[in-house]
Length: 241
Ligand code: PXP
Image 1 (cartoon, helix red, strand yellow):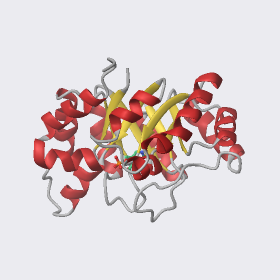
Image 2: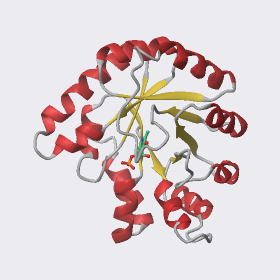
Image 3: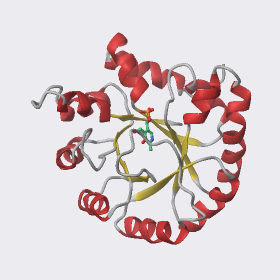
Image 4: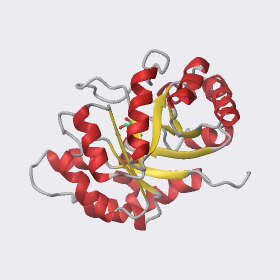
């Protein structure tokens, strides 16, 4: 089964644009869960334009599914994560001003740094996932860091999906086989949507979780969040067809 974790950063962005508490981020997280989401993802960026550091405590108290916090492992970020102990922490290599995450870790270059960070988080009982591109040597190096899972950066897949879906999935399919062989759990995220999700799921054996924000929240403008979550869950169903 592949879990759907809803990234609620865009909801915080709308709230922050007016200064009051509308929409209510905490209620939105609760509602996503009651409509079927199996996880809630947040990515508190250093400029706090999306989810703020102060949102994390209240979210931790209401999220009853899987709480996943993403971010660059600065000391400030690590303190936040260690204080609130989410189920999972996804480490991304984003520089502070990044618009969105658009590349994975070079785990070969950053091996010793990542090893240390992964151990600190795991010692606190937090599962760790590393955001990564489907590059063979980086998968083996990811394994050496001790991480529990990797999250494939699926931007390039989504970008090439409409022109060449087989070519777009090929490196991810191959990388997934390696992950399964060496015992790395597989998550995925970025630019996944109602068009490209089913094919991705069907070609990635052992896909444990997807985290989806931008497209899902955009779809919710048309279909409503309850319907939208059901539509994404339908794309993730396990049955063959
Ligand atoms: N995974 C990571 C590491 C991200 O930074 C993001 C965007 O915040 C996502 C997944 C979700 O991407 P999208 O908003 O395109 O669905």
